[in-house]
Image 1: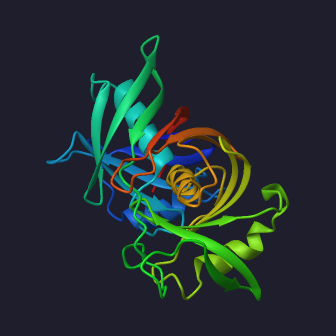
Image 2: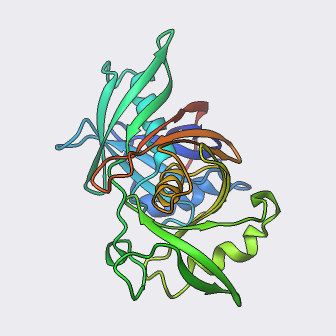
Length: 279
């Protein structure tokens, strides 16, 4: 199987051209190639396929072989892949993932895609649609007890479920390997959850670490950055244009605060290397 390894702010995936490559067991392949000791090493597998409703389809698997609905860093790299490899000459494309179509503007320098801006759609706050078990319609600044400690969470769906935790503890000091799995598998989240731990630096800057369901800690999460800004805005903690500082780099997120308005994400997309592997 031919592949290309790419990353957005360190959130790395193995990308496969599904126009040319046919994979018999995609989930099993995702587990194999994601292994950082015996495989290529990645946060998951993304297969780029033809689509009847968009320019391309993004089929995404987490490192444990589970399907994922959306990945903000991953979809930017899809845009770079299709442009740099001549699958399109358009600088504005559409990509569908599990039925949701996103529109992407590709930023090109010297004939190469270097970054992309994505319309990530509107944030969803209704608890039942995220889903999260909650007595209220929206889980905003709600209490949750994890490993015997009480937290305040704001839950958002960006096509996948997020629980945003604002903390005064510097995110670099958090024992994420202990608390991340406890959030992911908490009974409040029937489909598991991505959990973002966020320091508010000021109204235009957030520091964030993330524990992703099915993968563990990643260096960045595009949908998580969008969810964190949405949560900060509705809690009155941030302005409408925010830089989210992640372990692997920065993402620019904007949202007008209207629940019917889209969140826009801009960030880099980088090719690491291409190769072949036996399945």
